[in-house]
Every structure is written in structure tokens, then in C-alpha cells.
Image (tube, rainbow, N blue to C red):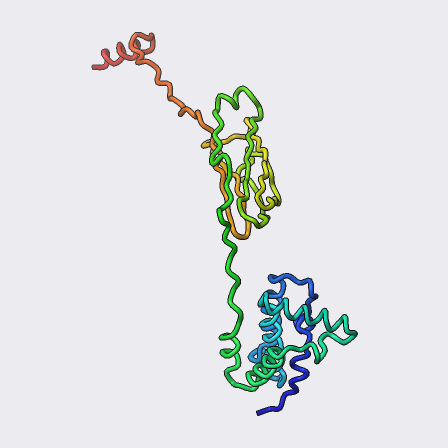
Length: 260
């Protein structure tokens, strides 16, 4: 087995390995991990004898930073090391589990099936947040009568989104038709709070069949408010009465009688 310096493995700066800052989000860490793995994969670097070692370091960095609990512990160790005047991580601040992780990755790096070994230990995907109870929207549906649109050029309605959870809801809001004017962009609802939005139905822009919607999309929740224009009447085709006594009808009848 190839000898590996465990001190170097345990003292690597995971943020430096992934070329990120400590303020990076979970999504940024995941994207950078995938990008670096594609670039450093041994199959794509057949002429690089250190490709396997690089891939193992990237996997080790992601296993620590990709797990919220391990990342918090790692960040605390980095802060403690910085306050003591050491480098990124001092040997005194390195925990036992980090040294064990270093030995584990060092052993994996020289195995021919290191990809399968790493894949078995990739941290699971964080479960989506479940709002309890789910946010509510009032009203559930908006109806605007066509007679009201004939009287007014713009009809206004109000939509209220209520967050019953202790979390903060952030997302995007949009409308599906150009005759519904309202909030377009981002919205935010605090814990146990409500936010109201005004929408306008523009009479001169309404098109048949008069159906639209206001859509609220967040990471963990989607809300839809249908907007409907009622009072449409189908066009009736005017059928003229049967003309039997008109002059041209009498002339045609006489001409037809002569030719018989």
C-alpha cells in the first residue's frame, strides 16, 4: 500500500480544495463538487498519476462540507484555529473523527474501485422542508364578471398569502396572461405572517376564454390562484327569414315556369 501523510490529509482546507469561500451556500458547494469531479476524474486524466489522489481529496472535502452537521463542526474548528493564531486548522484542533476520515480516504485512494467506495458514503440529500400546516391563499379563486369589465376599464382584486409555519417563505410570483396585471418577481412571507397582493384585470386586454392564474412558487411549496372572467355569451348567428315574396324571387319563379 502506498504511504500517505495523514497530517496533510487531515489538515487540508476543504474550502480551498473546492475553490470556495466559507460563505458558500449548499447549492454552490454541490455545483463546484460536480464540476471538479468531472475535471479531475481519473478516466478523464489517464496521463495524470495524481488524478486518483485529487479526486479523493475533492470527495473528502465534499463529504465534510456537504453535510450540515460536519460543516458546522469544521467551521468551528477553523475559527478556533484562527483565534489561536494557527493556520487553517491546527493539529490541536483536529478532532479524532477527522483523523479517522483522513485514514479512511487514504486507504480508498489506492483501491481500484475507489469510485464505488466513495459513492456508498456520499451524504444523503437533505429532505425538503414540510410546512406544518401548509400556507393558505385567500381567495382560492377569483371571478370577474364581464358586465363589471364593461363598466370599468380596470377591476382590482386582492390576494392574501398566509404562512402558518415558523419558517420564512421566499419565492417567485407571476401571472400567466397579459390581461392580469399584478405582482411579478420575488415575494417573502415571515413566520406566522400574511402578505397581500393586488391584481388588476384589464378590460381591453381580456381574450377569450378569459382564463388566467397567479402562480406562487417556492422551494418547498407552490400555490395557484385561478382568475376567470365570467358572463361570456356565445355569439348567435342571425338567420334571415325565408324570402318568398321578394321581387327577385318572383322573377326567378316565373323564369323557371317558362322554361318548363
